[in-house]
Length: 427
Image (cartoon, rainbow, N blue to C red; front, side):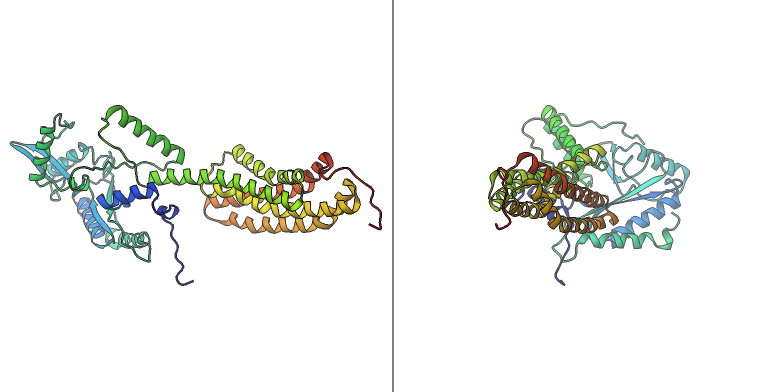
């Protein structure tokens, strides 16, 4: 038990050699980690000398003490490029904390005219500022690095000192020729630019475009990736290969794998259990009939999900094979006992009464045990686990009703054991 470890990362869902995982590893080898910490700070007005000074100190404190931080960005140290005679000048957007109203106004104008900063590191009203901490590639350790970062951030934020908390380009002209692009890059590097190596690989054959979005469902992720691919195909030449990676593609890949796995698991579970029932009951017709009470609660539960608008989340994707696997236990008891009793009584109605009087109570008790056990999921803080537990309870109750009402009705209707016969008491 001491060596038992929990891995809640997205990578844990994938096998070694999976295309999605290989692509993410390639990205990390080139650019580092895709994880980041985003600290938002509400202020009365960011563009005040004391506020800028305090947030700068906080940003430097976070960079110095938070583990695995590769790069820190806030409005004060973001690169600012300005055209000057004979070239460009690259400097921090806020090189020194301005003490005059004129200096404050100049910094505000720079920030509000910088598209990479606006609504990213500073809000449009100038009241909400952000500090972005990008993480380096995590080393192989026994302790998950993601568990080390938040406590340090919280500890720093809890410090008493943080308790209170001139031509600007209206648009950017992209180079139209390769020569212009080469000149721009040379000018950027010789002017002291330091951001390019974070966006382009060493030999310039790979570059990154990083986007952040609100939390998306698997369906929205598919639409987003499809729109990106469609745009690239329509607007960019075939010589450029686009590969999407990161958390967004992991969500899509997990949903696809688990969704396909659920269908395969359901089909194989159905076929395997059907074959087992046919062999056990020694009747092809009876084996097929016995599967109807097993599938019935699954169909009812899926119908309830559709009626209530419950989405098929990852925990719910394994719902179907679990319900079939559990429900078949009571079904085997019912049909095995029914077959044995029929050989003795010779009549379907008499056999039904004898079967229910012997296995009815054990079937009910096992179902109630399952209902109580899976009801515990309803106490979980994770909504998807609550859904899984309550839907399982719903399915088990319907499985019990199917064994008590649907299975007997089918036996009386289809008479799969042949014609009735009067069996003497001697037999």
